Image (cartoon, rainbow, N blue to C red; front, side):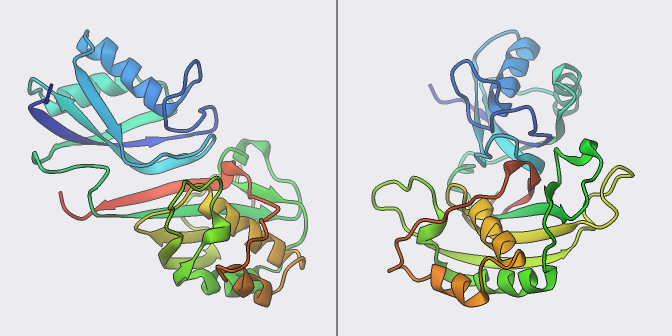
Length: 260
């Protein structure tokens, strides 16, 4: 049955205790928790939710969104209040807006901004571990900045996708790929100096960001060269990458919907 009313709901969540966004049997996920909350708030199951991005286990979101389909309209402010009252503290509804009938959150033109937060050297306060990845080795961050620039633009990222489906298209255009000192998130328990890898694109493949970050970390440790990174973008190179960066440093920072 086609639902008559459609809404776009913007959310934030700390992913550290969730097994990603997508529903899985007998596993706590963000989507499962959202649907369970709506069932309690509405008192029925006659609704449908569709997410905009399938984040991995332990990955957080400063901004994500999902589409809600309903048969009856509702007061958006009242629903947002009741939604937040019944969600766990590590998920927050930010805003609700009504969207047109032809808006489709899966096919909608959009740009996704991811950020990977990391620090290196001395161990920092464990309270920051859910958002910042610690690399115990000393990293050459300036060299990593040069490496990040190599990935910017249109390339074949065949090596940067885990378990690709048949017929997968590996060419992706990275609109931004850069490393800067972290100014996005700050707390008194964060390391004194941390860094942020910013990566923006219209679409990412499974584990693409963490595989790229893994190569940049290996570059910073002196295990790879800039030429190695360039060679990894050669579609004829089928050798697998041997390390993926931890999930806890990855943050979905913003989704831009272009055709609402």
